[in-house]
Amino acid sequence: MARFSVQFFMLLVLSMLLGGVSIYHAAAGIHDKPFQRFFTATLTVQLDDVELEDRAIRLLHVNKLPEHDNMVIVALSNSGMKDMTLNWIASLHQNKFHKFLVFCFDADMHNYLVANELGNNSVIVPRKWLGEFQVDGKFKGWGEREYQDLLRGKIRILMEIWNLGFTIFYNDVDLVFLSPHVIEQMLFDYETRDYDCIYMVDYMDHGFEQMNGGFWIGKPTMKPYWERALVLTQTNGNLVVDQAAINFVLEEEKLKYTSRLRGLSKSLYPSGHYFHQLNMNHRYKIQPLVVHMNFLIGSEPKITMLKLHNMWFI
Image (tube, rainbow, N blue to C red):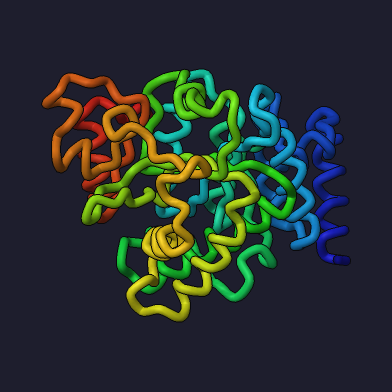
């Protein structure tokens, strides 16, 4: 604490010399002047876990979608995915979505977003939110052991957000928005009735829809099912990936195809299976609202495919 106080004092003096930049604005991630980026990045890295949690809670409230109650667009990323994250953000901005929050697993990722004028949309994951799981800044490929820890850490973060009463609109960062009407279309059938989860369909397995773990809207009522999924990722060798685990839980609870859960249109919200494996949208000339570039392993193939379809916006 003493070391932090000395650094804080030094930054305060420097801010006065540079023209009176408010430390409050710097810590809040507001950067009206170029040199304020330095303060935001430096102070946030120095915050202890309690202060990081306070910042995360404050920014969740700041980024609530005003027309959708307690809904927040949430993504998780690390510096191994920084360019893809920025491309996802660019697709949001192009379609008039400016409220969202990226939970960063490492300080370098957060600092990268701050340097791109996104301090109010970025927070380092509080250490206690991850529990026993360790996640660093390296790119995690599907199937790697570290990738499994990232997915388990993801579930822990989701549960913390649900504990605060938010509805989560979860996005993987290897997808893009192609319309400003993404949410309205997702909720179209639910204007007069309630739901627990609306999700992208990843693929069909023996006639059953498989929920895509990277694009869905889920209310706090989904928390118990994800808690069970987290346990399964640690105890069942066939369900180490979060998507497999949550699909197992939802099928066991017989929740699929009920009024509480709904799979989205495979042509308007295609996963990588439907978009680039089955080529559905090109074949039937259907313009999607969102595209998820899964079913490709590694960042380079994903970026190549996004560029091929003119979906690389940075």
